[in-house]
Length: 446
Image (cartoon, rainbow, N blue to C red; front, side, top):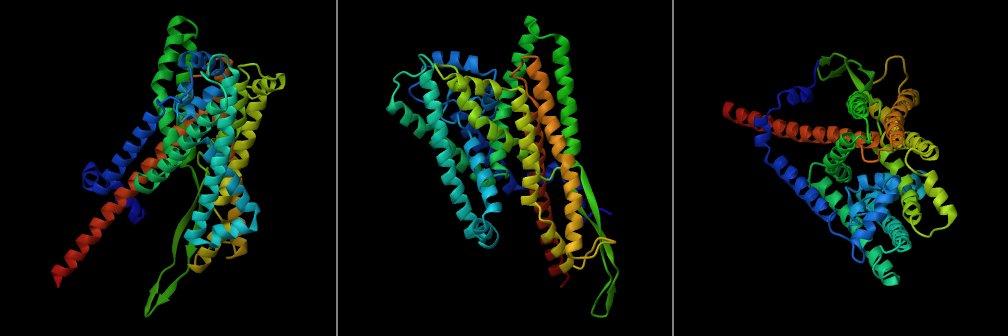
């Protein structure tokens, strides 16, 4: 039997959306914030010769720089103020989360500190983000200076101005993402990355069709890529919706003189509990060193730096192995952060629920952890395969601009999450309307 929330969700319509004024305001705020982000990707960084930089980027985009440009919504291609995007913030978040699990002080602050503890951890994340942005911006400035003719006036003034511009751009995007989460439809950071990828989608498709028209890319290859993209989208939707449901039973209970029969429900465990986070985290970890080495390798750089840049290029064995390893690691790591079997078992015990054949308490927690580990293995393999297979195929065809598995994962997953957020707002709106009607009806009866 469907729950009350599911029945409400089935009755949603455009009329319900038209009455949800607060949701409409949230959507308009989100669209306005994303528009500001897109405008920022076209504001160029000072001190750069656009023509010389365009030639340098043309040489570098075949590697990992093209992937970084995709995440940044084309800001790297134009060396805009948002060129670093949110990659330093995501990397800082990863490190803080790892440290929270390893450090008892940070773990206690996270669990027992409440709202004040959460703000303190966010403050640490911001400080670490500034540090990463500063180092990465300085590396980009050095890499640009090593490319002939790109920088109009090389020196410390250019380096400092570059660091201030890029650090300020990333911090503004971080604040904008928090505003979207709080005042918009949620998922602020993911939506900014999503907007950057979608913005490049028309030009990417146009460039691919142009390659086919000129004969540089066989028509059968274009058709095959489109079919592969459709298949990958279908696979992503299937796995993101897949669940392993554990049967939960509730015993009979007596309240006053009434005896209530035992009830049954399910504990849904998503096959991919971590969502698209492992792919974003893995890409962020790889993009930081790879981008710096790729830019620096364009100029008079040491031989070892050019060697590293070649190894970390898209489609290279080392890049693929490290990418798959990071995805697998973060799939388990993030699942352990967002889902605690012990807490779930305690909540079931307090409410009187139990898994048939499993003793409440530690045995239930161990059983949930066992099931969650097994399905997380499948979810991690699914993420790795979807992210890597298109990368291998497109690298063999020498296509750097086509939307790969990572982009499709982010677009589809963020779309599903955003639709769920909007649906939750609509259900809440409809539920509030039903509550108001019932109260009015009760008053009339009196």
